View (cartoon, rainbow, N blue to C red):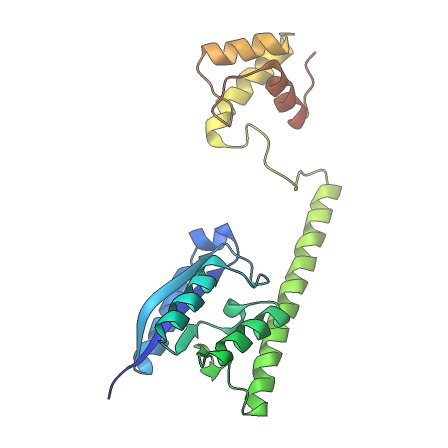
Length: 224
């Protein structure tokens, strides 16, 4: 019995997930499903650090263009419905485009054909699954927002980039800046010292008096 041809679509929405186990977990789950169901995966498309609320995604766009032009395969495997998209409307639009070209999308965790609109129960279950994925994302967003508000109320910095000195390789430079500032050295004098010692800014550029002043300010210290 010949194997069914398919492509796999993996997606993570944050850089942290890219560096973590999100893609690896999805890859293993999809390949396990493929082995069990005699499916041959021709190619794996990885969407790295792209939100599930965005319809136009580089890897997904490339996937759709390539299989539509080739006329095969007619099956896309995703780990779960929310990997296709966490926004219900976006997911429905993607699935409708797949139906138009006779392409099936199967969620490997449930074995559900997300493009099957002939069975009203299957369609309803897929829609509910997408709706709960969207609800879960919004609840997580609310929790994170509350956590940021709580930390901000306690005086912690929670928004924007971490100030100079946060990274290990910057700690020596920050210590020198603070030490010189306490002696009353001018911003320019501190910048000159840093440049003489070959200590670069975060951007790898020479220090200027303004960049020294900015570092002191963001670290809550004023030159005396």
